[in-house]
Length: 251
Ligand SMILES: C[S@@+](CC[C@H](N)C(=O)[O-])C[C@H]1O[C@@H](n2cnc3c(N)ncnc32)[C@H](O)[C@@H]1O
Image (cartoon, rainbow, N blue to C red; front, side, top):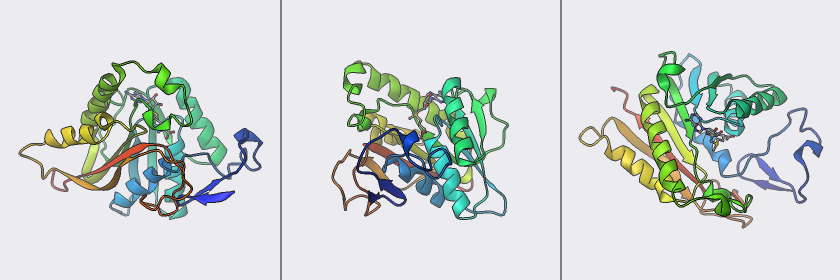
């Protein structure tokens, strides 16, 4: 067993997670080292007030990042109200299972995140995590069937969905709040190009959105310790993309 990332342990032998001592009791979760960056990136960008921070996890199922966000805030004494939304009702049951196993609480909503009028209560969010549906090209090392399941048109179709979600959710961010966009993809169309196009859509008004420091494209790695990663001790990890956007306080 070795330490990986900020709060991970990698075990040397693979076995069903439910066989590990403490899993059912909620002592830990299984999460890739690159995915573990989401909670600290978003939480560190949020301006603290005396009110609980309202956070939306817009594509939340099965809840890996939702539960990490809640744990991250909880261990630092930061009050949060998290809405975990996903379009897939069956996958939302997995969010509920994970919350229960870990003894955490969030409001679960089954909806298309982009159809805002169907689910939103008109209260803006301090922070939004958009872990958008993608080609999953960054997790091929764990799912080697992915390249065989993809069609030529998938990148463009998924990039269009990501764009639709980004544009629909941005108005829900409070002035001064932040949106963390991520995908487990190595393709620029689902990462840097997507965000560049989003920022360009503010042409003439680019003071409304500020791009904050974030890892950008992370290529999948199997080496034990990669010093170029944001976390020095981040070991082997999936391919990922992160962009962090702040909404101007006067918007
Ligand atoms: C990459 S997975 C999310 C993984 C999750 N954030 C985690 O860390 O466990 C993408 C999710 O987006 C959901 N999704 C796809 N289109 C959506 C939409 N229009 N609105 C809400 N959720 C959507 C899918 O059902 C899927 O669960």
